[in-house]
Length: 183
Length: 260
Image (cartoon, rainbow over all chains, first blue to last red; front, side, top):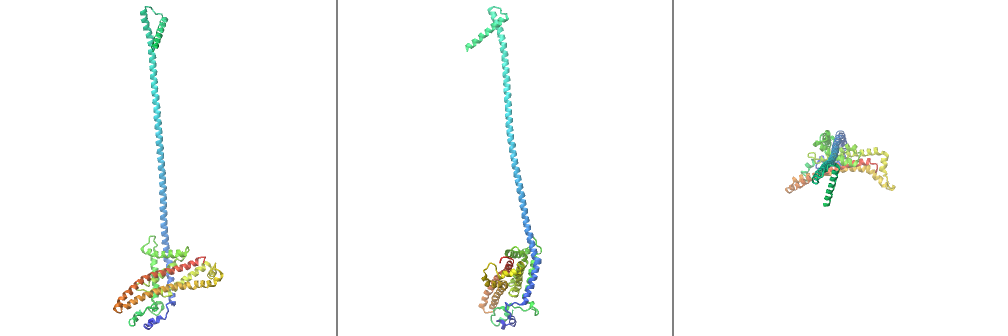
């Protein structure tokens, strides 16, 4: 083709492109071997080291985060438990106080009741005693007054003790029967 | 190049395989051609970049470390871990070297000033293929033992006997000829064809630019196509680097697996 136009091209054209030049194979082998040795010694181990360090760092970070989260969860759980406990405790205390209060009130009420009834009873007894006393004095006084009155009226001396009392009894029973008859 | 000089007086000369031939930059040694220098340049670029970016190995990466790690992580995850499985760490330096070496040499094809994919010189794909070839056979022999390995290739278990007549030659060819051949050829051919396409459109555009008025106008399309194809080439260059590494990993994975 261009053989006729260029001496150089003609010289080169003798080579078919698919026929290798041994020199190039040798150069290729040498160059590739140098490259291989360099990369194997200096590049690949470093890349692998960086890769490993990075993986470790990420994994370590993730582990730390997981641990922190676990701790936080535990803390939360314990706080919640403590809170629930405290709440229960306060509930119990309140309940106890309520019961106690009710008991105290009940007790006070009972005491007051007792006191009141005691006072009432005492008052009643005092009244009864006074009434009895009044009745007794009345009986004797009424007797003597009536006797005096009767003796004056009848003119009869009734100083005899026995007779006097008999007369009074009779008078009183008459009075009582009269009052019953009236009812 | 020579073609450009030649076509000025004698019409358009389409680019050809001759455009992939380089004379020594100085002296007469075949070791001092442009592709050879580019291969060594790629070794320097790759090792400097990845060694400096990996040097600190910080947990929080710098921008450069992140870039380096992204490439390494890509090979590690999508090729190493997924294809080879639990034992992939042993092969990471190898796979990573293949990927970066092929990738950078491919990308030279669209890199300004260099603009030549080194892998379009078949010698270089062959040299990496030799490495892969040796590695996967070596791993197989080490993992399974020489005789069981050969027996597995020649007599695949669980197959009716008459089938071996066809299968055995195919298997032998696969393991010893087809695999390395396709591995090297695929990479070479992709890079060769891609570069040739770019040459056609750029040289064609240039030729049109030096022609009549209407052709000058037409050269815009030619250059536009060349630019579009450059992006396309970028994709292919990355893809081929990936495929080469992936297949190498697959062959190694096959060598490690107990089942056929």
